Image 1 (tube, rainbow, N blue to C red):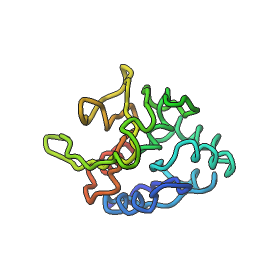
Image 2 (cartoon, rainbow, N blue to C red; image 1 turned 120 degrees about the horizontal axis):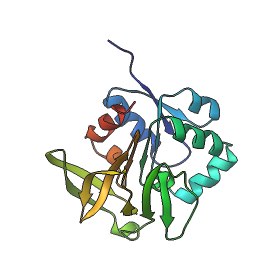
Image 3 (cartoon, helix red, strand yellow; image 1 turned 90 degrees about the vertical axis):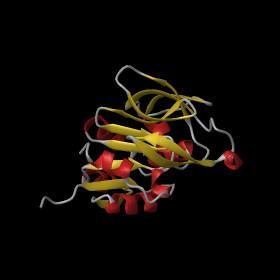
Length: 187
């Protein structure tokens, strides 16, 4: 039996521990990443939810922005919520820096304030999946190389492009590991 993939979870902000547990349930060796050395030791990376502008500041402080930019160019990355914002090509409301890994335009906090957060059932893979939206971004545009895997209220909420995966919701907040297993299949 092959060794499980070693997947890092960027552990600067957000509920990185829940992603770590979801990856373990999905069959990966999951580790928290806070340094360039830890980043270099993993096969793939999850960028969790949180606050994207704060994450960018922390990446600068921790001297991780450039190592992460290089990682995104070469290895699979899965971004949820704020992670989706950081991986998009274009960011609105307001505009901000991102890594441009997927040809997407995302609008920050587009579903509303914290009080507007919700749990919804969305169609996925021939069935349904629970999706937790917390101050979630909305994907406003997908480029020609982006594949939409799931939608909510007519908007893409789970997309992939090449080795990268983005969810505007929080799959780590449910017991369902379908999305994390999909990401592991990209490694």
